[in-house]
Image (cartoon, rainbow, N blue to C red):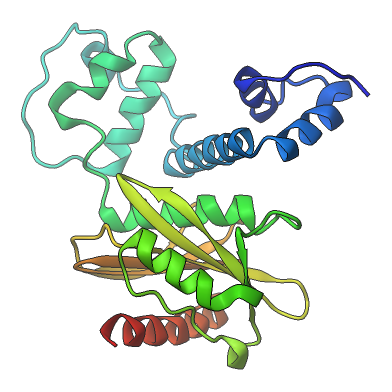
Length: 263
């Protein structure tokens, strides 16, 4: 086994698949022994998954010439009606294609701030689920055996009175939870598992200022998010269950969360 000092650079290499295979075991051991670096790795991985989810299927499309001209500064940016998610993704593709001008585009005309809030919530929730639902030893920070502390801790950090829903009737038991970044604030993630090992997660944040509800999937064969937003909070239930079953679980979780918030 290779033994050497690892750094943040190695985290990026590992995520990009560029870390030599003979260093992987030592790298994983280093991560487990370095909590702050393990947290960075999880955060970078979540960001990577969220970006891929946001631009899935679009980065391979040809970039319109007019957008390339805007990115290169060869054409003026005109004030227009609100742009679609496709326009934003195409612009991002243009940045990746030409390179070196990301700062210009990111600051132009408020670009990057027009994604619907519900899509942002769902994408963040799915990204977090993809990372942590697959973890066996480090899926949660606080286990279900310390449920009272888990609820109090997450409530204080997120800024909501959070009650972990009891999903026993739906066949799921609470595994535990963790605190995650979400936009400019924080989110609580609660993880559940059934007797077959199938996992689903609840992603709750106090950052929402809109009202919406729906279902979102970032990839055709990936997990889905059933979400709702109300002024003052947002929640997404994420899993790979058949849609009807996931919707039933989400309905149960929703009622318990809302009752907890109102109590």
